[in-house]
Each structure stands twice: as structure tokens, then as C-alpha cells.
Image (cartoon, rainbow, N blue to C red; front, side, top):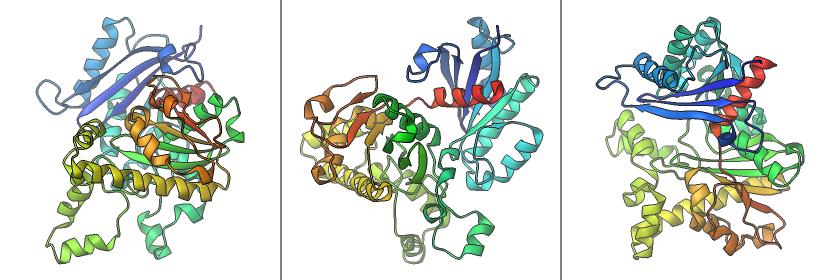
Length: 389
């Protein structure tokens, strides 16, 4: 029997998430639960007994051994690594070699908080199993199909090219998975469906997907641009940065921290948990209401913009923590868009569930769906396809 197990590693700066899947059982549309063998997380890397990523992966290896699923298993076909930024160099799943690692290291300035941790996990995994195929799957890759008109910023083109300033987009594995899962929900091929995907978690992004191909997305050079997020501002007049530096006397690092860690819902009302904001709104808290309204207003703007970009919208798909669980956000974001052919059924929207489902009214020309994302399954699927090619 050919090996069919794929270990997915998501190496963060202080955590290591892992999931082991059997691709012989993980069928498209079934969710990773059908093929998930085990999963877990090692946290607080750099503290106590977990000194570094090597110690973290050793801990993962020992846990897999206890379950009879060790890294030395003949059933293990490959390791798939989540990598945040692939720049313009990496636009598809890539077999990791020394040359590829060297190229990835050049991209660290584009994602200084994420790519170094991703590279650390890759280095340790390659040391433990140098004989095993290891594949990098990039968050930015799905968005590499954007036309230049969508990917370019209107800044001096030579400066932009020199420093890699353009729209890359993120959450690509989620947008890829959800857009295809939405097509399956409609019993159509991805090539037949135009979808607006709304990935709404603590980080949030929207994408316009035409026939299975991304043509625009809300995050840009970094994950800061676009929608209002848990702690990130999203879209902002760039001159606000100059103003804060000149008038507020703030340093670049202070402004960076402000916009990435002290803005968004947290900056507006002190909470970045939509459940808590909902509770406070129910009690009449005006700050929570304002934060919710700003969040939803930005969402509606992107739905309208991407409707124009696509020309024809067949489906709108909500995913990730807020998208999958907040009926209030879904209803408010699409309320009053009947003229665009978008109508949400209140009863269907209020029903909670763990599977992909439609929440649009029968009279809605555009299907509205809630589609649980599965980035690990997407990474495993792309990894397995590459190594079994």
C-alpha cells in the first residue's frame, strides 16, 4: 500500500500546531474529520521546557509515537508546511530544497513576524526526516492570479518593484478551500461559480473568486489592509501615519503596534471577541454598538465592490470563527442588499451547524452560504497532490 498520511505543520513564533491526515480517507467535501488521525498544539515555545521549535517538534514526535503514528511510520507520505508569504516567487505548492529555503529567507522582510517561524519549523522537520518529501504551501499563493490592475498600488513603479510593494493577499488556503466547497454545495464545478469569500476571524479578509480563480482580495502587502479585524485597523488613509509621527510624536514601531495590535474592534470598544461585543450590545453599550456598525459597514463596502469586480455573483460564503458563528454579523452585513439579488433567510441564518449550508432566502438570486474552513485539509491536499503527482 502506498503511504497516504500527511503531517501538516503550522509553525508560529510561540506555537506549533499540527494535524495528521490520512488522504485515502479525506474526501473532497467531507471535511478533514473524515481523514483526521490526530491533531494538537504545542504552545509557549521559548519558555520553560519548550526552548525552541526543535523541542516543540520533538514533543509532537513523541505524542505521535504514543499513538502509533510516529514520524518514522512507513505510512507517512510527506510533511506539509504552512508558510505565510511566498512573494511573487512562490505561487504554488513547492517541494522544499536547500535552494527553496534560501529563496524563502529572502522573503523574510515581507513577513518578519511569520516567515522566520515557518522556516524554523521547516528546518527542524527536515533534520528529523531528511528522506521525506516536505512541501511549502503559501498563504499568498491563491491570490497570485490577481490581474496587475488589482495587484498593483498606484505608487512609483520602480520603487514598488525594488521593494516588493504590491498586493499579495493572505488566508489563501482558506479562500481556496471555501470557494471550492461553495461550488460543491451548489452542485457545480468551481469554474462555473463566481464567489465572494468572507473569511472573518480575528484576522479577516475578503476575496473575489471568478470561476475558481482569485481576481481580487482585501489584504495587501501585509495582513493589515482591508476589513476591520480583531486588533487591526484595516483600510486607513496612509497619511494618518505621517500625522501620528509628526503631530503625535509617535515612532514607526509605536504606530506599527497601534495599527496591528491596538486597533480594530479592540481599539474601538476594548474587546476583540464578537461574542462579548454582542453581549454588550444587548445591554445597550454604545461603544460596542459603534464597533459592530463600523465592522459591518466595511464588510458591506467590500461585498458591493466585489460585486462590481465580478460582474455576476453566484454565491457569498462566510467562513472562519466570526463568519461561521455570528448570525448577527451575517444578517447585518447583507441587510438591504435585495437590489443586488442578495437575501438572507432569518430562520436558516439562526441555525448553528458544523457543516456547509445555505442561509439564503428562496427568492435570493445569490446563494448565501456558511462554509466551515479547513486550512489543514487544504494544505494536506495540495501537499499530497504534489508528492504523488
